[in-house]
Amino acid sequence: MNPQELTPARIVAELDRYIVGQGAAKRAVAVALRNRYRRERMQGEMRQEVIPKNILMIGPTGVGKTEIARRLAALVGAPFVKVEATKYTEVGYVGRDVESMVRDLVEAAIRMVRAERIAETADVAEELALDRLVDILEPSTKAPNNVGNPLTGLYAMLGQPARAGAESPPPPPRSEEVEAKRRQTKDELRSGFYDVRMIEIEVEETPQFVGAFGGPQMEEMGGNMSDILGSILPKKRNKRRVTVADARRIFAQEEAVKLVDTEGLKREAVRRAEENGIIFVDEMDKIAGSRDGAHGPDVSREGVQRDILPIVEGSTVVTKHGPVKTDHVLFIGAGAFHVSKPSDLIPELQGRFPIRVELDSLTKEDFKTILTQPKNALIEQYRQLLATDGVTLTFTADGIDAIAELSSVVNEQTENIGARRLHTMLERVLELVSYEAPERSGEVRVDRAYVEERLADIVKDHDLSQYIL
Image 1 (spheres, rainbow, N blue to C red):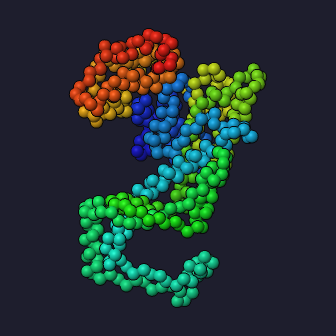
Image 2 (cartoon, rainbow, N blue to C red):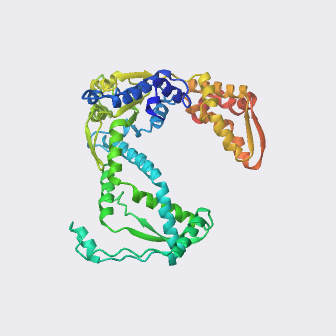
Image 3 (cartoon, rainbow, N blue to C red):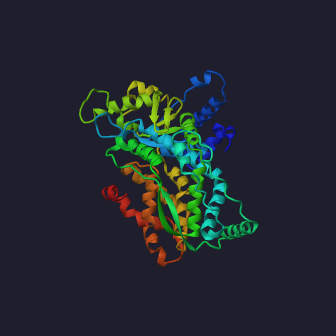
């Protein structure tokens, strides 16, 4: 979608297709996203001075905090990572380094840009893959190997130009008859004529060194060793017997990777991570210690906040793809804040999340909407799942009302887990149908009587519902 078309109202409308309610949070992220586009259109020195206004979402679990951030990133194709603040601890304790969130963001950007580049070169890679398959199926039409002068590679390694006579002559052109034969074989490959034939191919395998070093702090070192040694050591080639259809797919992937400019890919990925990246930091309330000066096993909470602070403030993190500045990365924090409060965070970190939005607990009417209206509505998911076994699910209006009502009651009586309660309730309601579906077919009508029969006893027994629902 064209960024110019993404007005705040349009962004909220797109989020409404997947997330029910929470208008204040949607408006906040929509404005933050639009401000990012406005900054890109600015000219002059002021452009660098405009920093994103980070957002802190406050609300119980299961009300849509993570989904809002994830859908927002997908809407604009921005690199996105979700991390839990509780994964990070002070130096000296077991845990991940806070800078790993930025490295994860860059890796997400690398995957995104690589997928785009491979898609752009798909047609050329497909033709090259067909050429390789024709060489295997019709070896007589293959061009003669150009061995060349062995000193040419040595000169290249030494950084010296090739000497006169070192270059080998180009192979002679193929005859018209050979070219016609190759064109015919390519057409047959495209039509699927050879798809089921088994052939032997050689597949390149890059040596992997991840896991050679223990501990989460060494994961970056393991990746770097793979890159360094993988570029020095010769590629290992293993022979495999596969169908022509699989070989075509494997060759196309290999050729697409060869066509991608690796250095250009890294530069673009780092740029996107710096300018468009979104980092969602969940469980912020778990690192907010009480302000009464108590000490004990939670003493590291404030240390975690102080470790995260420089990343959110704006710093340069060194990654294996190059240095990354976090000045313009959008951070979205989230937490239930049942026990602690946002004011329990250290003042410096509070100041870096100037926009606070409270998400509402879900009501019975919200549950009914979640079950039926979103593009990925739960009821529609179950309908299509069981339709594969020949079962037609029909939910009546009073059946949907009963599921929403009982979900709301259980959330009030036990732990409020928001919309995730609907997954539990529907699984209980449809457990018997899902179990018997392969042996039965026809229509299953889910009305209020059916729902109450499956759930009433569990909902009434408060103690039992704590364990089952």
